[in-house]
Length: 310
Ligand SMILES: [Zn+2]
Image 1 (tube, rainbow, N blue to C red):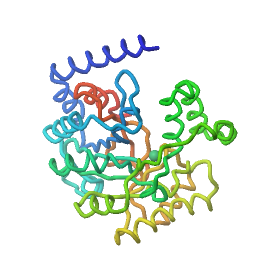
Image 2: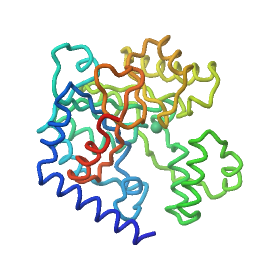
Image 3: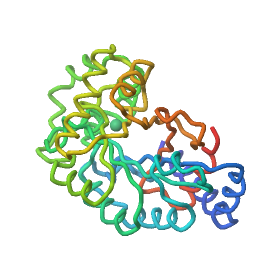
């Protein structure tokens, strides 16, 4: 397993490095010269566990700030940061536009990303799970992965369990069986409202990602409506402004989700379907490319190139 990871890392890094050095960024621009594109990048957190390059680190340890700074500098140098309304609303737009998004509302987004993003005038949307902001609670996937870090469970078992959850199966029995193991530290992993408000005041966008990170496509219409509208109302009452954006937990949604968003006056919905967005894209089904703060510039560029026009 370790050997396979090492080989795949070396391969990825070598191909990425060569692609970058051989003018990959200009090649990408050439390939995308036919019309304007909006590339939405999707980050989560800076945890050394989730951004691991070779070996998973600690859930509660965040790093890669200087690498993230390099990524943002690179994007700023070669492309243009834009919000969706700037991209879709301006008839004269051309070229490649970048929007940065962060899902879930992790505290390290405030500690590490916020100062860097400010420095580079990036356009960023932070999607937060309104019920968990300011608490010491953790999202289910972080709780489960913590079991791997503690070596209580194997990575295979936990990842299989998470995959099941993402496919709509209940993992309640599994959680019940392992309840005694899931004792998370009394430590805040997510942002609090003061931090959220500070980011908002700086001009970045804060937007809902449901109230409890429920996967919408597994809920009936009324429950979806509750999850979506509670998160919108909570945010609007805290920040005293209207929300235009929404990100689907795990990227999953159905016709009911779209109907609720339409009814709630949300203009732009963000999936996790990889690809670039053109002006013809349905605004409630925007594509995003998953990236890590630990990705080298070569690997980041390679991810963009491989996900173009899907
Ligand atoms: Zn999420």
